[in-house]
Length: 88
Image 1: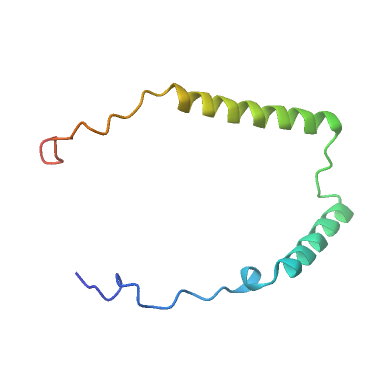
Image 2 (image 1 turned 60 degrees about the horizontal axis):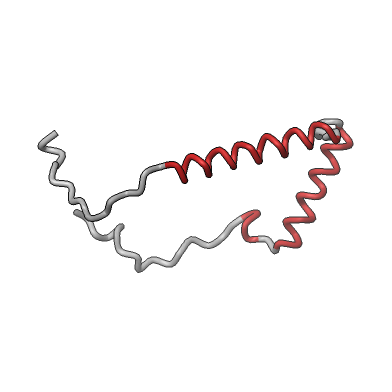
């Protein structure tokens, strides 16, 4: 196996583009995009009822996922797995 690519001696990649900008500069650009979208009529304008329904829907999905995670049986970490891929 060639270990040249697996070693972590290289410098991490430099941030480029949007990620390299300051948070303030990112906000300025994003704000301009939002304003343009509203001027073009392409931005979605939420009504009070739409926003309420979306919030309720998101909350119920999150609640159901949390309930499903709590209802799962605990994992017994003391049991060792003896089967291997070649046994299957």
